[in-house]
Amino acid sequence: MPTILVTDLAGESSPVDVDSGQSLMEALRDNGFDDIEAICGGCCSCASCHVYLKGDWFERLGPRGEDEDMLVSSVDAFRDNSRLSCQIQVTEELEGLQIQIAEQEC
Image 1 (spheres, rainbow, N blue to C red):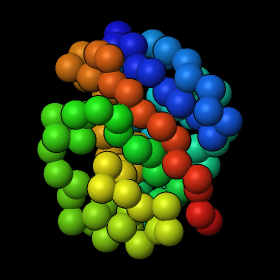
Image 2 (image 1 turned 90 degrees about the vertical axis):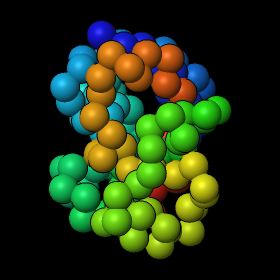
Image 3 (image 1 turned 180 degrees about the horizontal axis):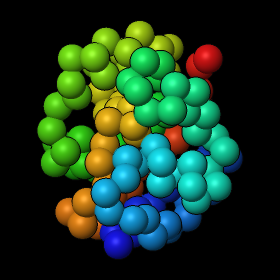
């Protein structure tokens, strides 16, 4: 069960223990982070689960997929370290992951 450090829209950081095998979006939603809207439920058809990966995590997780890149790069809050949390599967290797929830544009 990896621990992830989540910074919400208010700038508050909280460590969260999450179950492996689910998407990061599900983990955030299940742990009460209402800043994640997750409108499409994880189908990679919107960008309402947009997060920023801190530190070297973007490089460690690898590139965005084509659909994810198209969606997330179209939002005003896009940054080089943007990802859709529905496209990141939680594994033990994510221990120590640091993310910041992005402003949601729906």
